[in-house]
Image (cartoon, rainbow, N blue to C red; front, side, top):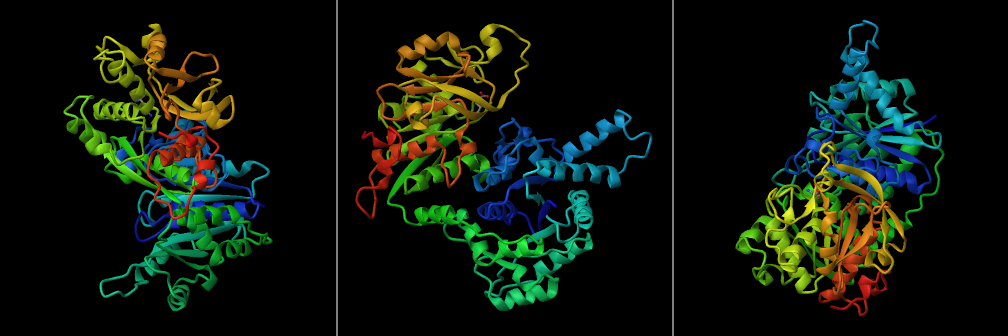
Length: 562
Ligand code: GLN
């Protein structure tokens, strides 16, 4: 029988349900089980594609092109669960499907209701990713806080599934807050109430993951157990780790969370191989050098808007045994500092960084600052990594500053540019029927022999995820190559540019895809690993020991001195 693990949250949001669910997934995989991860978002949006990065953080893109909640990114970083549209459920999707079925007459004239029609639809969607015969268990994170109006149908569906599968096949993990009030006293009352609220909807938690600043002592855990009907071994302390979120699977394992869950589900325990996670934490705690990365983007106020980029930079650091210091540079501010012009002296802002990364983004605002940063990196021979918009910026910069086309631009930013070096495909071929839809999800790139990117991946063909609408204009390929930009990768049919590199530069590269979505702490995305390696060599090592192992990184870039 396949198992289900539900993860819910009480007291308030942002307690780390996603990291809890992901860490449980990582621990189960470390014991050889095959897991699937499912995220439920009780909002009415059908997907996260239209949500502002300011409101909701990053939009995470899956292989099949689903635009999902950023929690799926955590699942991807902690587990090997395949992630697709099917792993992300929203209220909008559920209602849309039910209403479509009603319009098609599939309910045979019956009254369509929240129970059973909506809950049946939710249950079918929760179970779908686990249908694969190899799968041992599905971990289902219910977004929001128990008590929210929006999550009621999802909790009812969870209750029914637990009831139908039986307690030995379906368990509930409740993540809750144990605050410390002024005077230093630690309070369990909010958690007692949060559990009551869960019990009111008919779910008895098997595990309490208690978020607190400091580790909880045994007395408090016993008290919580007594008040909530959760066995003492199921009361887990999840204090604020001072190192990295990647230590959390180890913190849970030390308290026996995974073996307790297995016992509850009647699964025979297997050895947990946690060596890879221990290595990640060790490398994070004992860096030999520091890399300062200037990220020049436009959604800087919200910490989560480039979540996968931050994480991938840290993965690159771990792979190089380097600490990564991220310097967030608002491209808008850089733009005003540059006096609105791309040729201003930016040393004042950028001098301390070892490399520049320009991530993805939409809209004209801030692009002048990004172009200025790209120019600075090109001229100062500092590592530059352009992702999606960051590649397009690299192209615009060379067109303006090397080819001398002052108004060269993307048609996304200037429809009247006399040199539209980045444009819509339909503008290039003058076909208006494409509809301006985005290129979304996994697709193949062919890497040119002798290119930096090919040496970094060590392969000719790669699969990476896309999320963009505009492309490097094919009409300008020859001119751009004359400007010192090498086309380093194309789509298999040769029709679209996937990667550009600066000739005569130690590490200057832009890609049209988003490598950050496939990066993890155990296996950093090759481009991030190589980029951090190159930055270490361009900056001043602050190492405790001589000769960083970073130099052994398997990329050409990592060995280049600037
Ligand atoms: N705005 C650009 C485009 O649509 C880049 C998108 C991105 O960076 N994800 O092509």
